[in-house]
Image (cartoon, rainbow, N blue to C red; front, top):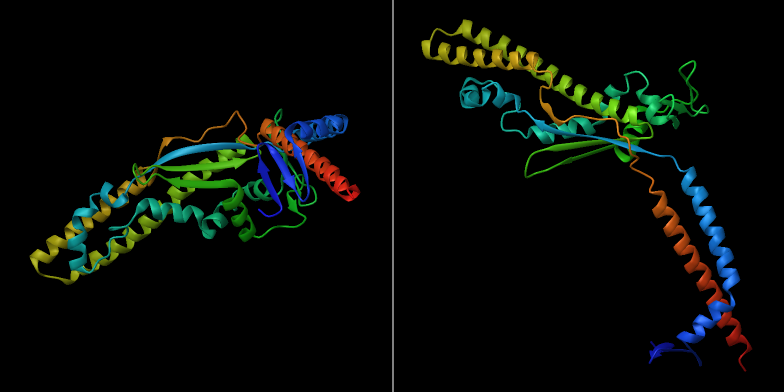
Length: 306
């Protein structure tokens, strides 16, 4: 630009110039300051990196089972519409539905009813590897009496879970759903992930059973009203399909979400990367120190130039 330009390795700026050899000479003259500051930054970065809390990530790969197709309901969807009966899940995206359920505020509120889930999410402070116990922040939660000093709302817990704990992705090509839970306790990470999968299946099962029972009540009532043989046969087929759907819901423990890769207790931490933190902190510390030295040198050189 108008104030700075480079020609053949020389830097010209506002009436003075400096080459690379001079730059090296300037920095060499301040070598003690640079080494001292770099050492301080390096040692500080080690202390900071070692003081950071370790987090562990448990992961599970899931496949969705379409309860409608599994029970043979899909073949009756057209017949059901003619009879005025709605088949839940017909034509829907089961994966998207389950992901939406798991991310919902209502589902979070349901999970928080289980023992130690809310304290582990909102009041965990550290993790004792020997005892495999979570240490809680005493300013927030009293672990001995199991009483809250300041109890957070389920809405705050929901935000924290989505931001810091839970991660869900779906492979559109294969249909696989990957759920990851990250926590300072590897044991809780695995247990919470297992709880999420189990309860998502339980709620879906309960919903489908209730839906089937309502449909059966309606179909039986309609069956008693009609005298037409064709209609009776159609309604009987729908009743059979709903009974099969209800049976599938009761016999399958993994009703909608089936595990291709179950949750596990992680052995290696997922974060922080201490070596990367130390390297970047030291690198930028050296760059900062070098920049300050050069700015100071050239500023005073310019000030003393007649």
